[in-house]
Structure formats: C-alpha cells, structure tokens
Length: 273
Ligand code: DGL
Picture 1 (cartoon, rainbow, N blue to C red):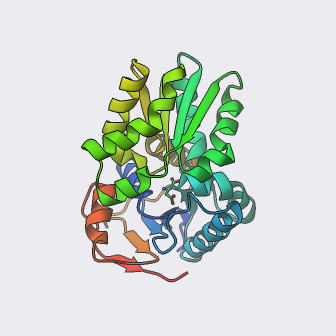
Picture 2 (picture 1 turned 135 degrees about the horizontal axis):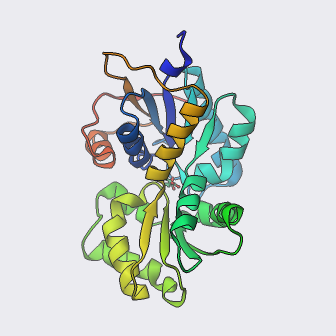
C-alpha cells in the first residue's frame, strides 16, 4: 500500500470487551479501516501473570503489524498495564493504551481530587492507574478495587437485574468511606454494566459520581495521534474494511460481538496465533 494512512488500525483485547473501544473508534473515525482481534482462546487476562499477558500481547501486536497495522490500540486495561510500554519500545508503529486517556479525563473531571478505579485483578495490582493519574496530578487520591465477576457477567449478558446489582453492591460497598466523585471503568468489559454500576455507586456513596470509560478518551487520542503522524486514512468512495478476528470461535459470538459493538458483527474470522 503506497499511502501509509490507508493501512488499518490494529485493535486488540483479551476477548470481546475491546469492541466497546472499537465502537467509539468507528464513531469518531468512520473512514478508518481496522482489524479487531479478540484473544477469545486465552481470555481472561485479568488473573494471569504480567509475563504471560506481555507475551500474549506481543503475539497479537506482531500479527496485526504483519497484516499492515499502522497503529496499535491496546483495548484491554490488563494488557495496557503490563505490555503497553514493552510494545511501544519494540514496535515501530504508535501504540496506544486505554489507561492514560481515561486517567487524563478523570483528572480533568474530579472536583474532590479523589478518583475511584475498578478493573481486573491484574490491572488493580499493577498500580497503572495510580501512576497514570500521578503523571497528570500527583495530589489526586486514587482508590482502586478489583471486580473480576463483572467480566463473565458482561459476557453472559447479565448486565441488569438483581444478580448484577448484588454483585455490584458487594464490590462497590468499600467506596462508601471514600470521597471519590469520579469512577473509572478500568476494564473494557464494564461499559456494558455502566447503568448498574452508576446506580449502585451513587447509592453507596450518597452522591453524584461521574462514571467514565476509556473508549471515548482513547478514540480522541487515537484521532490526534493519526493526525500528528500523518496516518489519517484518505477518504475514498469505498467503505473502509472492518475485520473481526478471534482466536477461538463459537456459535454465540455473532450475538455477543454485536452486543459489545452495538451493531451487527458478521464474518468473524478464526485466526491462529
Ligand atoms: N477487557 C479486559 C480488560 O480491559 C478484561 C478481561 C480479562 O480479564 O481478560 O482488562
């Protein structure tokens, strides 16, 4: 391809959660082609060791680059926490994480100087959000909690009702003693549970909480990076190609992926790493 801008954006997650980010990228940059890869054979990443998450992330990023990716979006908080710096140092295309953009938005939003973060065990253990927030404003307090059951709840589509509410209550109760006024959904699966999470966190804290996800902020940062690096796709009459790849495929994926992408996802392709 002669024009580097015509190459696709590579987006990946441990599974289907990153489609919430792909959706926002599609909305903000409708002319951009992309390849989305969900590592459904090896999901979840949230309870795996940093070395394993880094190895899986490198496999995927290299596959996407071999297929022409002009930029990589690590649409998984766990992979962003453990592999983003490594990928940035080893690949010769821009690598974006979902953590810094969300942290920047949260710092801009908080009035109390206190931010809550929920994510996988890996993301919380890594301290990546604490570091990212401190980069913008070291005086801001960050309280983070792991909510591992939110991932299977989102995958099962149990995103509302009593079970989702009870689990959210159990995880979010600890925020009662904090003074947070912003809560970052630090896992790309969680936006599907945003209504329940918002309801419960406001009930628990007794105040209005701004619930932020990283998709919007990441798509904004991606648009800026593509423009700065002259990688914007030239407009053509042909609709941009959007490819959806998974490392393990099952009958339920068309429905599941469509739910996360909020639009019909057809032609899901099985790839081996
Ligand atoms: N979507 C992943 C993230 O944002 C979480 C799912 C997993 O544990 O693999 O961290």
